Length: 310
Image (cartoon, rainbow, N blue to C red):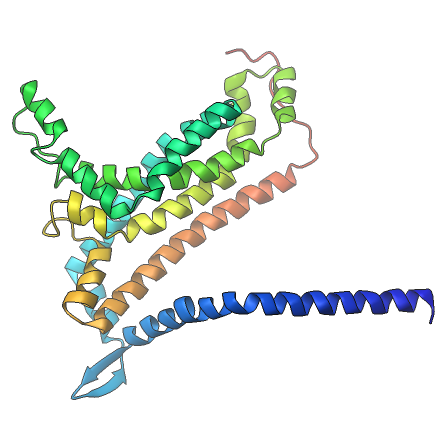
């Protein structure tokens, strides 16, 4: 057999072995994906189009029509998206400087900050939310301190501030980690080249660091906006109950667990999923635009105005 033909045959055998090995190793993952992701999602979509009358099941669009035309539902959806938007903005404003400081710190300081950021994530979110409720409650330490300085009619629990504070506290690590990961991948040679061409630190940050960290920022936005829009626990405890802050996640919970109306709850879940997927699509589109611009400028020299001063 010619050497070339023998090499091709050996490569085919190796590829077949690797493919079979990969297929066998992926079976548990595929089973978990089917049972715990795809199958429940299929039932939710099916129930959203279903309704029972006289013990008969039929498909209809009434579930969607009822809730899209419901003012309370639209208010809950709008309030959920508004809180998710505020949470995303504040986590970015706080998380980016922290991630930048971590990327520029020594390994020892970096590890300490990393532990401080990730340690609260090891504790159940319900316990952390209840702890914040005790801190912000009318009998808590913050209100007691405010009363000592003459502010007697201040209430934190049941306000927008309390809900946003709880959301920012819970989801802040989900912004810091991807931004930090993107910042540490930026080569120092790019910043040194910028400085050699006359740019100061501020100009180098705006022209080099910030654009290259955009993928990490977009990843953080995606990781925060989705869970913040569907949160259940935080508005229930920090919002002073569901009378005022009845977000979309709480509405879905009520239909599934209290009213036993799986059809209405599924319809709301599908509508929420469509809205969130559309927003994630817009964010990812912006990410692809940034990557495309970086590729278009790849190979070009870094142009910075010479003689720039702080």
